[in-house]
Length: 158
Image (cartoon, rainbow, N blue to C red; front, side, top):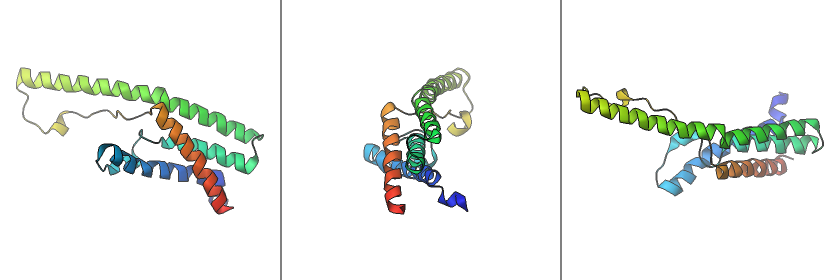
């Protein structure tokens, strides 16, 4: 049962849950639409990936100190994950947007050219996931979320 007392792990999991949950009210404030699917989706404000890795690194720092090798590992891991969230994953999402538009245009062309048999739109196309990565501001606030939540948990638990 040592797993249940692993503070860095618990902080990281709490940060993921909190960041995913808070996406729903933030999106509602911005769009006036309640979208519960954000609880399990990638992308959006704040980045749960960034919240998780910064919570992990902060928890490790609290437990082992800033001079420990494991803190160094968790910090480099956090930097790589956050860089990836704004780089590779974000660009993959932008490419998915373009591909989805190409697919939509192709479907429209086929429909007009060959009198596409009437089918449900969902049966005609399966869209790629476009919201994969994060804007830099989403990663920044995800990171702040992880750090702040971990410090708050430390004071509550200790």
